[in-house]
Amino acid sequence: MRPVRGAATLAVALLVADSVVGLAAAGIDLWVAGLMDQVAADPFSVTEAELTWTDVIWAGSGLVEMAARLAAIAAFLFWLFRARDNAEALSPEHHQHSRTWLVLGWLVPVVNLWFPKQIVDDIWIVSTPGRVQGVGLIHARRPGLVWAWWLAWLCGWLGSNVAGRLLFAGEDPEDLARAARFDVVGIALYWIAAALAIAVILRITAMQEAGRTAVNAGYSPSHPVA
Image (cartoon, helix red, strand yellow):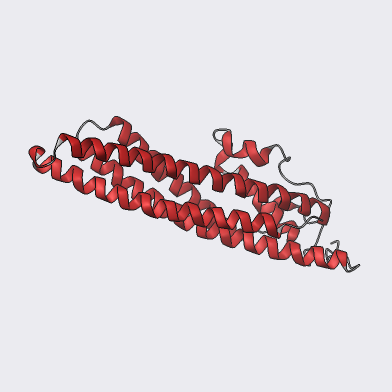
């Protein structure tokens, strides 16, 4: 087994950084929404220069937010590959999806709604000390924490997509204000997902590090066969 704590620390740090960037982006969203409300109420209360500057700040915050999100996702995937390696070393049981799906599972439409969760489920289940082998991963009980993380992630993804559609379809200040507020909802849901992802990472990492310590000490992790 390979050490996984370093990859976990990196993933947690970048998830926290992404959440901090999201907090700043949410503040900018609310500022933009308020300004758009002001424009809707009185178009002459805001100058053209102010609107231009607002566009620059809003677009810039979106780019920074995207960069932080991609960095966090990359770090999470790096940890996920390491955790999958260790899960396969802990038990020869066949996972529901091949390693290729650790990345493709997030990208391929439709299956990206459940493949990533199943991958994390399998890693968690195999890493659990004392788990009885022979039951089959597909029939094992799903971890509640992974369920919570995945539902929060899906809701955040949906909220952000709604915000994006409203933004690109917006034709007046009211539409832009609505898009900005929907983005705040999406960011809040991503905060919840990030916190739950950190909890999942730390739990799986702790179980695998305990298993690695046992292996290095000459003991085999307890995985009795049913």
